[in-house]
Amino acid sequence: MVEVKIDLDKDVVEKLKKQAEWCDLPVEAVCKLILSEYTRNRGGYLFYGSAPGNRKIILIQWPYITGQVILSQDELKALGGK
Image (cartoon, rainbow, N blue to C red; front, side, top):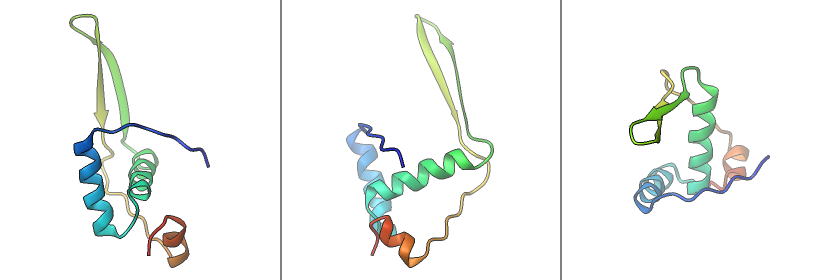
């Protein structure tokens, strides 16, 4: 495992917390699932290039299919779930 720390805007964290509560998981576990599924499913890419005014543009293309994760009780506990 590699630990990655990121700063997110408050509104983003609040939305993720709502999802985490619904899943009965810590927000960190929900972030892990989202990022893992994004990278594992075909169709997710980042494109970048130049934008007017000496700026960069990044286009985020989400995967085309729905990711599905089925977790055992042990896996849920490992993620901090109940």
